[in-house]
Image (cartoon, rainbow, N blue to C red):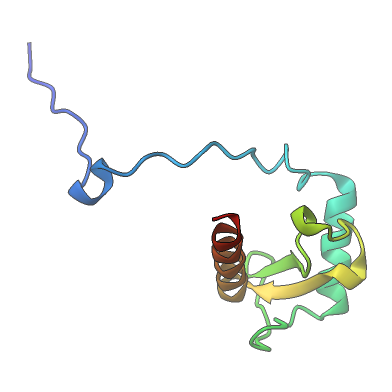
Amino acid sequence: MPFRIGSFKPPRLRGIKKPEERPNAHQRGYCSNAHKQWRMAVLIRDAYQCQGCKKICSGKRDAHADHILPIAEGGARYDLENGQCLCAACHARKTLRENRNADSQSD
């Protein structure tokens, strides 16, 4: 019987606990027709231009429709005034900043 090599886990990941399970996109409502229409309306209104860095997003994957005031903090889910177009990099930075603020407020 041949010897089977075990799965490799890099040393930096061995001690890290798995983050708490997050619902998938469908469960969070991102696959509904209402959300798709809201997203397209936000992107078209902003002409696919990032409101953070003013870069013109080249495609659908690079342009993200972002809630200015997060839904968890009381923002309206399908209100166009609560939406903005962000490039993937600006959206990642904004999300990271929001998560850091939420963590610091919960302590």
